[in-house]
Length: 364
Image 1 (tube, rainbow, N blue to C red):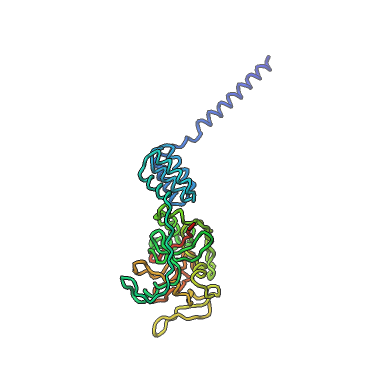
Image 2 (cartoon, helix red, strand yellow):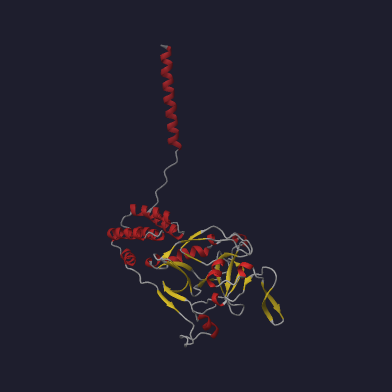
């Protein structure tokens, strides 16, 4: 009998212990997070789009549509995310669903853009000519620069120089310097904050693959091919080039400038070009050592100017310079040396640097 009572007490004790554990877990369990509101989901989705995090944007906008199936911004954002991922068919499917659910004019317009085949970019081969220059008349030196014997195309409202053609796609760079912009940061930032800047972490990459990329129509964006860019170290100074990047729009590297605009061997052989001050002013001189820039017979090929002919004396490359807060560039102001490639670069917060975007186009 005593043994039976002990067994009963033991069972009751176990039950009480388990009950206590359960109560403790319930009491101290983390409270469920408050669900995000539609406005919060919209802001979050747009944030992911700006950061090129398309997978996360899909999740945010899908949840927004689930909560507010008649909100057109959910369908538009979700379609933009799929366009960014290169899935145009899925984007069209989403917009069709959104049009049926909301009858939104904005969705109707975007859907029309995607369903209407865009005209192929106009291809023009321009050759050097002695014909009268177009109005307005340009300064003689600038007019000489604008005479060209290479292929150009018109795309998205810009003129592009063809650099390479592969099966089904074409690499182009803007014929003109489109704007001036810092590579990263601004003059208020401390130098230490700008250290270890690479193309992967630069503000100019975020801008080109965000705001600038999104300035094209949906149809034009569907023709821009996302590529993986290698970002090698600076071959002259060993400065880290950073991680590989997936880009729709990018800047050329030092290696690509040499490849596409002409290779004199100066880059590979580290020719020692220096600025030398003389009684008659500054001049360039070849001396022993690595120097700081490439000065060769292909300088003219690398010239570029602002479309409105305003001053932009140089354009950025995505390669690092001789320090981790420097980026290489091409100097084009003819007063100081047309087309020189400055391998040592300039501080990344310099906001006078010109932007010549490059991209691969699918023309099929």
